[in-house]
Length: 139
Image 1 (cartoon, rainbow, N blue to C red):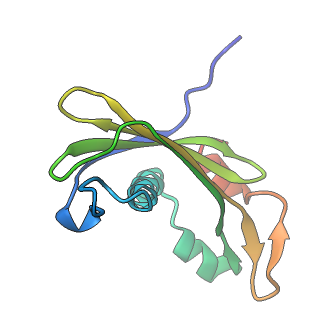
Image 2: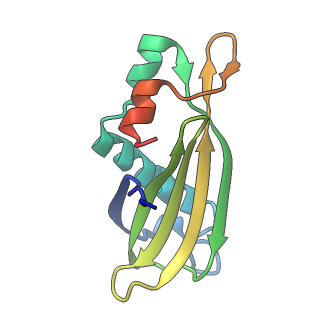
Image 3: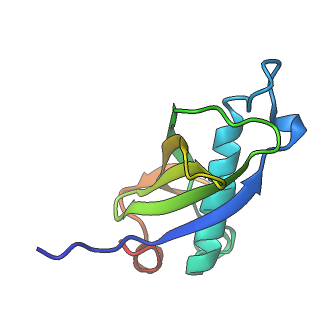
């Protein structure tokens, strides 16, 4: 059985002071920000511009679900890689994430986001991802 390689992209980031909580570790909500940066770069790399697509088709792609598994806290000055990988792009867009330290590859967090296509102004969910986006994302 052939295994299909999923589109993936990595961004290198560094923890800024303003991302810390009072315990001097990255506040849990900032991991979603890191995921968002990686997902945006992944889409750019694959030629998917959801803002432009909205202007052309009146479809938006809100995130309907997020999850984060915190494994090891990031601290001020840590350099890390956030990898975004498309898991699905047919009925919804599912992107998986991994955050690893640059210096030793230690896994710090894993997560996932789900997006759906929604027609505006009706705010009606489309039950599939448009074919050109699906194709670009490897779905």
